[in-house]
Amino acid sequence: MDTHAKMISDLRDRFFKKLDDEGPPDSRGFHAADIARVKNSNDWLKRFLEHHEFNEQEALNMLWETCTWRKKFGTNDITEDNVRRDYLEDGVIFGFSKDKDGKKLFIIKSKLYVKGAKDFPELQRCIVYWFERLEREGNGNQISIFFDMAEAGISNVDMELTKYLIGLFKSYYPNFLNYIIIFEMPWVLNAAFKIIKSWLPAKAVPKIKFVNKSSLKDYVNPNDALKCWGGNNDYVFKFISEEQTNGDGIMNGKLDNKKVHFVDNSPLMEQSPTSIGDQINEEQLLSIEPTEIITFNKDGNDIAGTISLKNITTDKSLSYKIKTTSPEKFRVRPSTGILQPSEQRNIMVVLQSGYNIRSQLYNDRFLVMCLPLKNTSATAQELGALWKSEKPTEMHRLRCCDGTIENNDIQKSYSVLSSTAVGHDRIDAFSSKINYLEKYNKSIYNEVVTIKYMLLFSIMLIILLAIFMGYILQVDIKNLTDQQKSCRISHEI
Image (tube, rainbow, N blue to C red; front, side, top):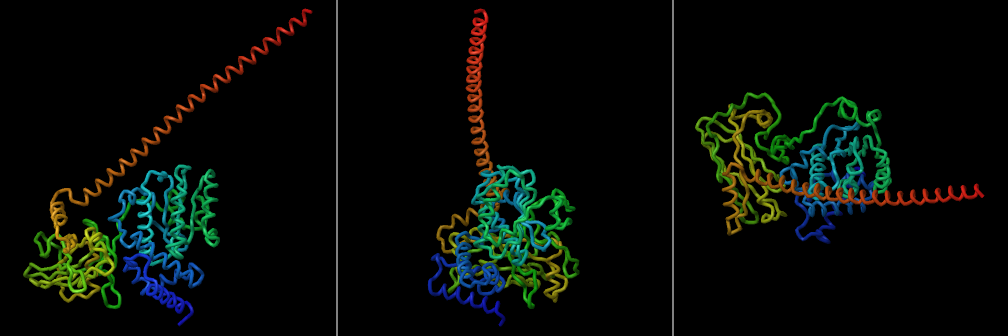
């Protein structure tokens, strides 16, 4: 065992010994996904050691604090479905392209951001969403923050936001920062960035790179740089949902379950030609029970629900797949498979330990999809290619319900809402936008009132200055007149 491998093993052992001796800071315990990460991810633990130059005690302290923060903040439960969608879509913050070292860029378009115009806690959640997403997409590789300061002014700089970003890197995302690239910073903001430098650890200060259109090529290749930065890339921002699926990847002969955020009409994005599937016609292929809501009840030591799938055709084999918005919460067995004509199968959905079902379960959803097969003996690779094609799928959406709750009014309300034309999701999105407009309108009103009083004060000040200047001129004229009279009298004498 090499030195680093031994230090990683020691860090893991020390973490679980501390957990056994002291227990978690929160009575609810650490998040199950983070505990699994400590157990299984050497790369993650190595990042903590690298962050503290292989000082084991400091790495342990940061690992403990990170797991504590992730549980309290709800980091593992953040998805694009439960953050402010308008914040993701307005183009102020987003991930795109890469630097010369191959690290993904997290871009902040400063001129589009106005301090105080956004709900700060919601903005924090959006930033963590992007950090988590970029971390997944890069398999834990570093990222570079790219501050696009072109055309920005003092009102576009939020010191609290910048301090929050730096705090994430310092405290909760170890060895995650490659560069802080600041593009075309106006000279009026020099003082602000001197303060920002003071917040950084000494070893991180050299990571700050001030660039303009001519020097950006030293850190970002021209083909990866946007045209507005002087590069060749004509990309125009548009938010694209993160598409990851349960069971698309093959690892060691097994289907690899990955995190997924399924979206309407675009569950699969890649196109891969295959001859093992048929096009779906208008007939229904799959019958599922329950049809709308999975009810979770106590089953021995587990809390579980059941989905019953039946191939209602008599001449077609089906490949099915089950997605969820929170794969870390649930164990779905089996999440993929093949149903022969008229075959029925029960799928167990078990809630992982460490989750509070009463407060979280109603936010989770499942998507059951199926495709017809020509070749019933298709390999896992062939099935993976089929699901990555653009063939239309039959889809059934399910919500979740805690069966231990005696009052089923919530369940009934979900059923009613799901049958309406608008739907629960659209109502939530509409309410969110209304709340945003109300806050933004209030902010604008306060600014208008402030400007009004400033103008009134300015007018009064100008009037007072005019009166004062008039008085001074009058005194000067009087003195001049008196001097002239005195001169004439002296001359006559």
